[in-house]
Image (cartoon, rainbow, N blue to C red):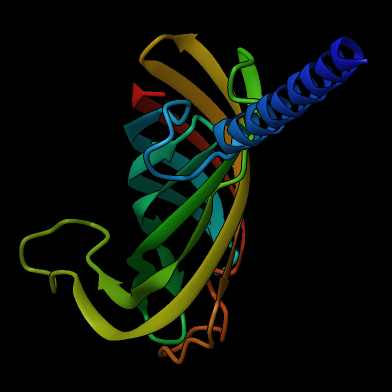
Length: 214
């Protein structure tokens, strides 16, 4: 009888220790699987600088855009930083004023960029810019003759802008990516001489050259 009791007690203790070890193992596993934004060994950080060239209609005329970006990449899949863009449209003749005019300006601000499936050679990114800028109505010297009045700003104003976009991104080499994309500019009302209320609202086609650690 004593032998049976010893066997039962020993079996109970073994089960208790095994169960506790199992609980501890599960707890440790759960703690190991918790991933934080900062400090977890699986989160990789990088960054890039970029040049962007684009085409867009501005006040119903052909226009070009040139911009730059600088961003911090978190875990390959999300980038945040700053971006800026300058723009100018074609010079046109204003018969009413007998002058050549055009629009020019720029904007910049916060850049947020989710990156979808970044480990694939071809993938998608979604850059979103929120910021502010300025635009000017310019009287231009179209002929370039020295005796004519030089170009000068007739009127200027500021605006707030939101520009979401979508880009097809190509991993060409380890530290260089090429992006082909579109974006859409949305601004607050612009009160500018002889200009519509939303002269730069609209689509833009862009080519972006990215250099960095991705």
